[in-house]
Amino acid sequence: MESALLQVVLSHSNEGIHMIDTEGITRFYNEAAAVMDGLDSRDVLNKHVLQAFPSLNRDTSTLLQVSRTGKPIIDQQQIYTNIKGQEIITINTTLPVFGQGRLLGAVEVARDISRVRKLAEQVLDLRRKLDVSPPPDRARQAAKYTFDDIIGTSPDLEKVLTQASLAAHTDSPVLVTGETGTGKELLVQAIHNASLRHGSPFVAQNCAALPESLLEAILFGSTKGSFTGAQDRPGLFELAHGGTLFLDELNAMPLQLQAKLLRVLETGVLRRLGGSSRRHVDVRIITAMSEDPLGALRPDLYFRINVVRLTLPPLRERQGDIPLLCQHFLQRFNAKLGTRVTGIAPEAIQVLRTWSWPGNVRELANLLEGILNFRSTGQITWEDLPEEYRENPDGKNLRRELARVEKQMIESALRETRGNISRAAQLLAIPRPTLQRKLAKLGWHGNCYK
Image (tube, one colour):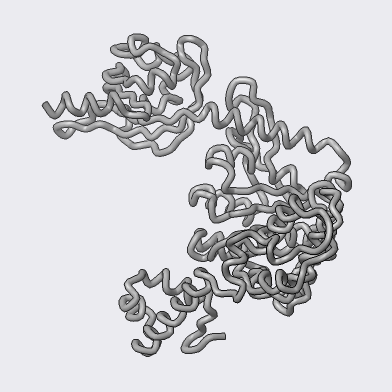
């Protein structure tokens, strides 16, 4: 009964499962594996694995290796051709099968990454087609913003801009943090354009936009033979050689890939996927994140990239800049939309200055563009604002009130426990790391706030 139940479960697995005995004869081969390999199970069952996959041999077949040695092979890429001449790329975990104290064979769980790798090649081809102009022109096209494009005079913003302009003249790694919409990429481009690398490529990649296998191929490149039709293609590190590589939302990068990134940053050397030759790259790395980097990254990678730390203030902490930003965006959208809006009425400005701005500067820009779709002349008035903004003209809103109550509860718990964070976390019924992150955000330092 148990054997029959196991057979049903394995047969309906979404992963390809292939089992052989110590003679190399296939004893189990599920439907997912058959679809992955482009075969009928009758082409494989009760046949030697090399008969079904003639491009393999005793040394390259992970199943034969494990059935011979009894040692597992974890997450290894395998490229092979089936009896129909189709080339397949998989990531395999191959485990020995023991019974009654002896080795009975091997079982392999495989994931097909052929389509992902082909997609990576297509993306890299597109990046290379964009890489046809001379380096100075290409750099200007990719990084168009400078420090003059960053609007604001608040002390917190001016401090960050001063630090960024100084850091622009070095090659040290830069980590930019800040809430969504605060202008992290704008600041990164300004740093590149103020640096000695301004005439060299600026290459940006959002790490949250791609799956791990695709992101790895795009970062490090691929070699000829990775799959049918594949050619030697440089990755983003090579495309950014001599310039700046900007990795946005680095916290979304899987931990295994973070380790590979760390090796390249430490050595300046990479290997393309499927290749063995070492390639030296000269790249300044700038990263950006919208959350606490220490809890989202491998500690060793965090300390490697956190050399220059720049934190952009949220818009709610630089409300004095809102009139300047409004003027800037009105000029932009008047030109874009053909409107002639002259400004914003005082009562509307007051609402904007007391709003919490969860989307920060990006939210303000989108708000004004939306309003100019309906008003073409005159001033923006209180009535032009969307309902959710007009509901709280005195500045009271749920987000701000929740933040205020949360701070009060944390302070009360710390007073009660005399600054003991572990006990305070227990009182608040939250994990200690969560409380530590909240304290860091509040500026808690020892027994006081900064």
